[in-house]
Image 1 (tube, one colour):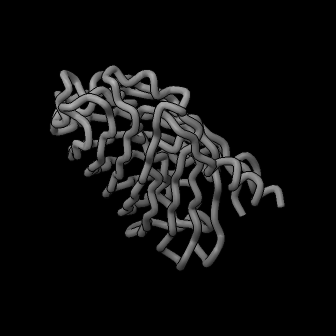
Image 2: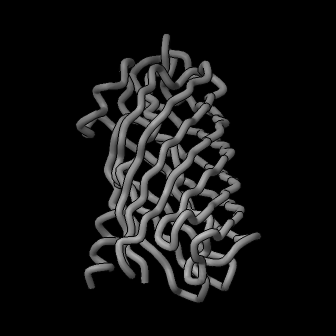
Length: 254
């Protein structure tokens, strides 16, 4: 019952007049090892926040300004077979896309068998989508700088990564990874602005995430997780940006 409650808490969503891009993954390099064994963690993790603005009433430039914002998120890592896991990552913020994917371990022992000195190598591939709508009844909608009454959009996300890991001790795993991601966004604006009213818009974003992190087991069931990440990204309508973040979380094994 406690685990069900925890899952429902982590995966709640809320409205906002921003779009957030996950800045890290915090996925370890070792698979769980057997069917339905797994881990669940909750973390405070950075996202890149882009503000909707439609600068100068230009539907080809829907964003104006960005900054780093920390959000609460959760990650479920569930074993399917010896070297294959199902991954689900999502955020409390409804304006951040969730990611569903598979992790396959190519080298090394799985988590259940790994000991000091274990070197592991895994590949991850994931996808996500997010439909969102908000209007003037939403608390943060006033942050949009033009006279927009309603905004609907949909994001499609693709993700691929390489994860390396090494156990310095039986309970201490260090990992490093690199991820490439791509996002397509499309939407529609409703406003009394004659230039923008009914206008549809499209944009796309590409980025790379580099990070290194660790997991430390607190006995048989609990673990701590820490991570440092560097992200470079660019929407097609804006200049590119870079950001760095320190992220952390706590989780449970079963």
